[in-house]
Image (cartoon, rainbow, N blue to C red; front, side, top):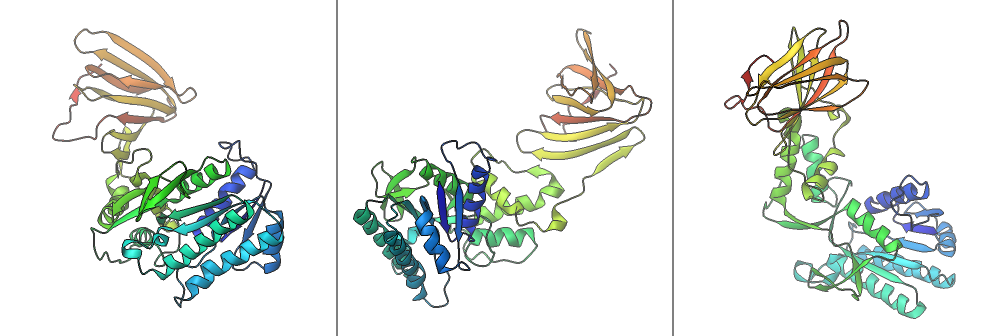
Length: 398
């Protein structure tokens, strides 16, 4: 399949082209139904001759080209409706009935606060043109009215989320005029998966009730239904938590598919290079060191423990706290004893064979470095963050 992407250097176009290349080059094998041969990238620096050639060869077209921040309002119609007309005329000339996708906007509903939107009117005109083209030629036309998009794009331009991410990551000032303002956001990765669904003929259809998307199997429009409604205040609060993470070690809750998980990935993409790395507090003594790596709100913490040759650490038990010890380098011995029955177990552990060992509540335990020359390095997970007011840790030799 030969695929033409117009607006290939925009936020959506860049992400789509990168991920189409992953499929073409078999780096992504999760979509076996999509076979990509050639990817034609068209943008503002491309020539009319190139567009003419691509329209003759394309089997599928993603029309992402458009204008959203012109100097003059009348340029909305020229940039959105005008290019759409040119593209469809070329396809007619080539008698190419390839499936064509149009990136439109929720503003094309001309509902609510979008009632007087010049941008919305230009997008609506483009939609009408595409639907008429589909009726005339029999070509499949897929029109998507996207809400606010959330992906890596130029800050202080067209996306409040990108601006906030950039500002927080780079310690720049920013203003939130109304924290209660709600946005409906579509994350770029979800959008790309929706485009892959379209390539496989599995796209979702919908109609619109004002600005609200209503899923409908025979709907006129197509949609990517995975969106998030969040306020500006909620976005900024999350970003401030992310910013503090290197100091607090606390990772905010980020369930699978959550807005927080997607926002954190986007936030990281705006970090300057000098913030890619950050220091951790090593608690060092004559026995070695203990360093906390990550804290979580509901899954405890992860740490790394280094024991010098011949050193024994631990020698304590817990009522409810539990741990996993995972030796990743060196050679050691883990001992555990039930404080009530006296039953005892031992596990010889080594970085040459990585295993996880439970430290059971009610069993006093230790870890001994058996080497005379090498450090013993152990990853330790615990079900709770250490609380000095309730340590639940009681000294007792194994």
